[in-house]
Length: 133
Image (tube, rainbow, N blue to C red; front, side, top):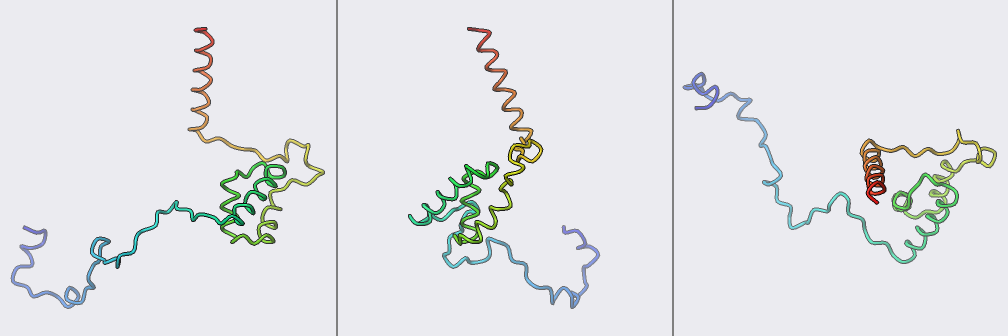
């Protein structure tokens, strides 16, 4: 027996119930043969685009140590390989010459708790190996 069925016996449905829009669920909707693309899918790059990304990765390795190659690739794809826009964006990460040797102005890489735990486990395993040897 449904929840309010006993109360509603003998009543006619209200206008609101008659006019309620139908509810659609993902499995009810026909996708017309289209395949879903995974969220982390990356389109393959052409040879020219790969060369462009490699140039920017090398530039960032020398000047912008905080950006990893995967991030540089994402930036290039996001800005649709427009060199001016990408260079302007990367300029924000470059440390000025007068601040290069000052530790307070260097990019700091932070570690997650999981990364810290992995490092701690690695050090403990190394210490254990040294003790056994």
